[in-house]
Amino acid sequence: MFGRSRPRGSGAGPAPGPAVAAASAGAQRSERLLRRASAILRPAVLVLVALLAHRVAGQSLLSALANILTAAVTSTAVQQQRTTPKSTLKPNDPQLGIPCGCSDVDPRDSFLRAKVDYSCFDQARFGACGQSFMLETPEEVPEGYCQISCGRCSCCPTLDSVLRDKGLEMFRWLLGFSDEGAKIKLPGYMVTLLAPTDSAVWAALNRLGYKSKEDVERDSNAKNVLADIGRYHVLAPVEPLKATWTTPFMRSNVEMYTAVSNGKTVTARQDNGGKVTIQSPKSSANVVERDIYACKGYVQVLDAVLIPWSMTGYA
Image (cartoon, rainbow, N blue to C red):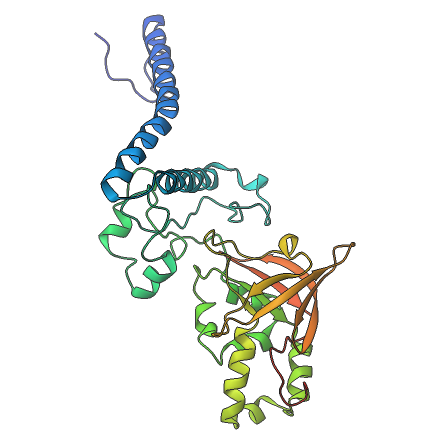
């Protein structure tokens, strides 16, 4: 009868005999076979579940299969994030922008659903990060839901910290006139920032008739105008994929929606040499530093402020 094995090294028992080694190898082979069988059968089982579910839920077959595909892609991306070595990650790799094993999987009742009721960013703002449903998660998400948005990941910077590290203090100040100033401090905020340099912000303020921050802060109307200008430099992700904008996708004549409430857009231009220009109705700016990585977004540094409509100094 074999005793309980002990750690090898100083004071360790004898190495296991051939019978034990053979049994261990056989067990490992069996486990590998079971994993392969599971990998083959699981998609088939999911498809069968989808076929049954669409009958019960009144969902079309095509919609059910689309949900399955979306869930599979999401699961694969999460698994890649968890297992990809840090040294192989690059900031522009789709789904792999997080240079560590962190994830930000939205809470959901089922991975068969493509959409969720509330995103991780929503849950964090609701104060739900400590709730049991966020941590008592299925085996597909052992780290818990919303690891990044709930601040349980220390390996990626917030957008605000990127702006601070890059010395873009005037743009941080500009965003402070709206709720964007608070949002960029949250790790789960998924946007791309078009961030003008400090000199570009000062040039725009001078054209608007302001010589100092104090001039702006004394003018209540200026605060509202600058709040909208700040929002105009925040690009919402593309739905339904929630893909944040990076310069490889800023092709000529691509329109990108901003955070201004009435759906204002900016237009990208890219020449043959790869130079990217962002066009607004009353101004344009060149991207002088591109695709600076943050937790769930990017920062593009501009050499000018984008102006969305006519105002003093910008006819």
